[in-house]
View 1 (cartoon, rainbow, N blue to C red):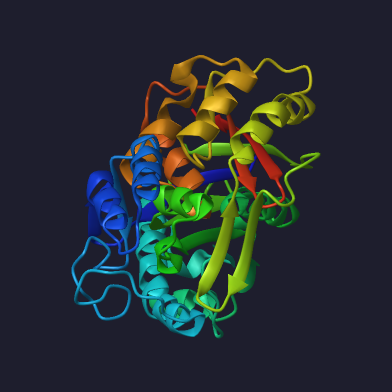
View 2 (view 1 turned 30 degrees about the horizontal axis):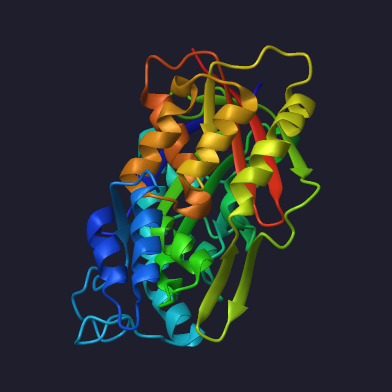
Length: 360
């Protein structure tokens, strides 16, 4: 039987901030000259985002003593402090998305046989898998795997691994859980690349229940047909994610959208072959410019990326969790029918692809 995503659950932190409020907060930081303020305004206003959620309650300017000082300036906590915050917040956010996915799938938690966790914004052990088993009431013998530090593209390899597991064991029920707290690595900087990162990244979690057992869970969902990976010919130094002394450091050069725009046609043609391109596309919204370049590079109509733009507008770029938010919207949208091509981009630059089909 074909492997399908039975359900997708999502969760975001309670603090929701408008893009304008975040723009003004970053522009008001000490030491900003006129040029930096103009660049901040341009980057934030062009991002295609209206609101974002963050685990940092003080990010809009309210002092929290950890990330924001009494005078509403950004602090520079060490990587250890940031990671401790991740360890405190990430498990419950991940569990919230997973509970939603398992509940909507109408699958008993005890039936989950495999747990795949995904994150690139924090580390600890025993990790997310351990906490999810305890918090969700999963069986203690659940088989666990973690995909870490792959970046924004990681959810598609996780779904690919889930598909491979279910094809090897048709009775398997796989729970995929992605959680990202991108905002905990925020920093005060006038560097254009850091400003771009601050203008798009947000926090969120998503989970998917995957099985090939036609008798397990509610009917419908998304059939997982095939996957592909590709490395672009350039971009190794344009999207880089490293660990620094004051958080994880994202290098996101202005070349990224242009590289994606140049390379995407070749990657997709290799992936789809002679098949007719689908009408619906789930494209990771690294930013509005990335979606614009994909739309142009693939010569698809604007409505093909409408769901990706909606998720970007309402939630921002939540790294690996974002593509699952998009797929959840598509699962619930009755106007989306037939095949869906999913694309996500990671450090390298890497292009991860998946072909899905709406179950009837």
